Each structure stands twice: as C-alpha cells, then as structure tokens.
Image 1 (cartoon, rainbow, N blue to C red):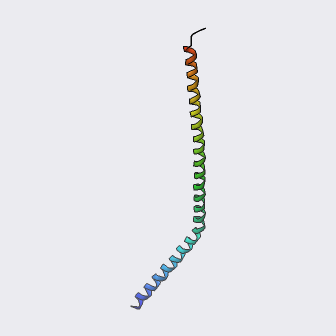
Image 2: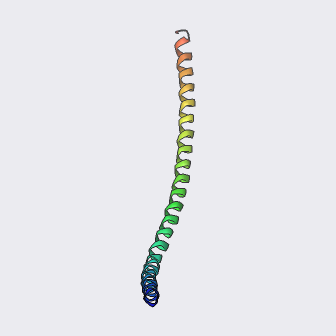
Image 3: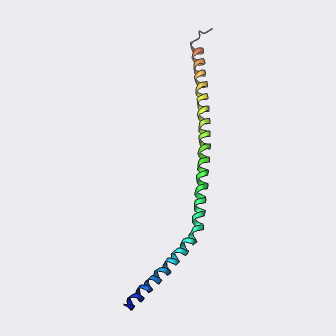
Length: 88
C-alpha cells in the first residue's frame, strides 16, 4: 500500500512540475499576445480610416461622372439643335 502511495505522490509531483512549466510558458507568451492584439486593433482602425477615404473618393468620382454626363447631354442637345437648324 505504501508503495502505491509513493507512486501516486511521485506522479502528482511530476504533474505539478509539468504544470509549472506550462504556466511559465503561458506567461512568456502574454507580451506577444498583447502586442498582437494591439496590432490587430491598429490594423482595424487603419482599415476603417481607409474605407472612409475610399468612400469619399468614390462619392467624388460619382459626382464628377454625373456632372460630365450632364454636360455631355447638354452638348449633344446643342449639336442636335445646330444640325437641325436651317442653313443660312
């Protein structure tokens, strides 16, 4: 019986030692995770800013396109008017 208890104690001590090693490794990776999370947050902020800028630029391009279409339509109307006017 005493041999079994000694075996159980030995196994528990071994498991405790392995657990301590794992806990130290977990603490060692904490700064890495903190840095990674900070970089993820920064990337997310940059993506949001980029999305806003792209949206502004696309809105401006759409506005210029609409203005160009309006001017083209006006020019086409003027050309048609000139073409259908009687020759002098």
